[in-house]
Image (cartoon, chains in turn red, cyan):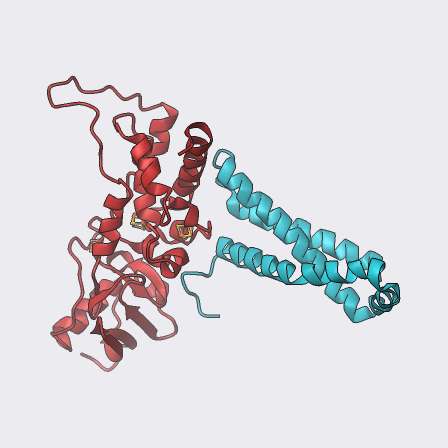
Amino acid sequence: MSDSVKLMDVAIWRGDATGGAYEHFEVPAQESQTILDVVSWIQQNQDANLTYRYACRVGMCGSCAMMVNGTPRWTCRTHVKKVLDGNKLTVAPLRNLPVIKDLATDMDPFFDKWVEAEGVHHPSKTRDDAIELIDPKSSARVEANTGIECINCSICYAACDTVAGNTDYLGPAALQRSWTLYNDARDADKQGILDAVSGTGGCHNCHSQGSCAVHCPNDLNPMKAIAGLKRATAMSFLKNGR
Amino acid sequence: MKKTHRGHPLWFSYALHRASGLGLAVFLPFHFYILSMALTQPERLDYFLHFAENPLVKVAEFGLVFGLAIHMFGGLRVLAMEWLPWSDNQKTLAAAALAVSFLISVTFFLKAI
Ligand code: SF4
Ligand code: SF4
Ligand code: FES
């Protein structure tokens, strides 16, 4: 390595569920370098014990999300150039989730809440029935389409202050999933969905700060979905008392 | 300020709504208590009314009117967001609520001095 290579000061959070601290590494800057490249470089060249998670490296799998300079990001799709603060980078495990080790969080609470929010398909037909024809132009389908590109990366969940303040809160991604299914003509348990999202951890906790929408790398808007659920649950309460 | 996940307009608008709400919640009991003196202790009320002529109090009143206005218009935005069909221009609406509140409170201030 020549002397002209610029070294970045990279602080990486090291530790586990019982606690930890930042450890500093000097990493050579390169052209077209992502945060994931930086983390991988450290693991390959400086400390083989560094634990982190990734799979696709192209923004498809949703497993590489971490806090980068205080903001949740897909590390594989974040260029160093875009976020470098002077010469410094800070990489930490995703907020609002328990840490397993170093940069890897336990995503179970996040996924469990998808199920809790009835974010699972409730079939209206069996395999023997004819396939239901869906009108792609119907307003419910158009609304459902706005949420289907979610890849469960938990960035919105990490950005949400309501999740931080209330561990029972289902969170933006799970609620957006419920809203998508609620608008899906093929879902057979709409009332079940509304019941699941109107409890103590439900959609009415959302303070509409919109951090979820600001940080979602897919430009989705869970805040909009949650506003939809708030309306739907309120209408259901006024009409049916639940 | 260091940028975190919070540094964006709608979070700011949320924080302003909370702060103005808390401010009003603290202010209103005093307000009603002092007004009630019109019935119970008119001389003390006169003292407070006189005190309200103080220029510093005028500045504080500007803050109060701003707080009332931003809490009302910000609250109307949130109500509309939650009860009316979705509209994508929430940032613009939040900025408009801020602008109108500022206009109202500055007008009030200029009339008061
Ligand atoms: S809504 Fe966006 S940020 Fe949230 S999990 Fe889905 S893709 Fe990730
Ligand atoms: S809009 Fe609601 S779900 Fe999204 S970050 Fe804010 S509180 Fe969380
Ligand atoms: S590694 Fe798959 S989204 Fe980043």
